[in-house]
Amino acid sequence: DEPATPFKPMPTDSPGFMTRPEAIDRYMQLSGRDTANVTWYVVFGTYKLAVVLQQIFIRWHRGQTADRRFSVLGDGASQLMDLASLRRA
Image 1 (spheres, rainbow, N blue to C red):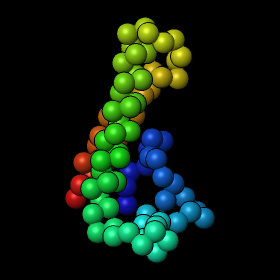
Image 2: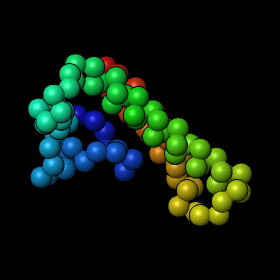
Image 3: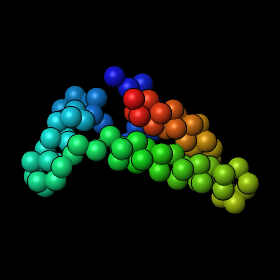
C-alpha cells in the first residue's frame, strides 16, 4: 500500500517477488531471530538511504561531482523521507 517511487529499495510490490510480510517471515524462519521490532529497522533503513542520497546530491549541487544522474537524488531523498514517515505508522 505504499506509493510508487523509483527509490523504493525492495521490489515487494512487483510480480514474482515476496511481499514484505513474506520476506520477514522467511527471514524469521531461516534465522530464528525475533522480528517483532522489524518495523523500526525498516524505518531506520529508509531514513539511512535518504541520508546517503542527500549526501550524494549535495556533492553534485556544489559542483563536487559532475555526474548529472545525481541531480535527481535530492528529490529521491525527499521521497524516501516521506516513505519513512509513512512506514512509522
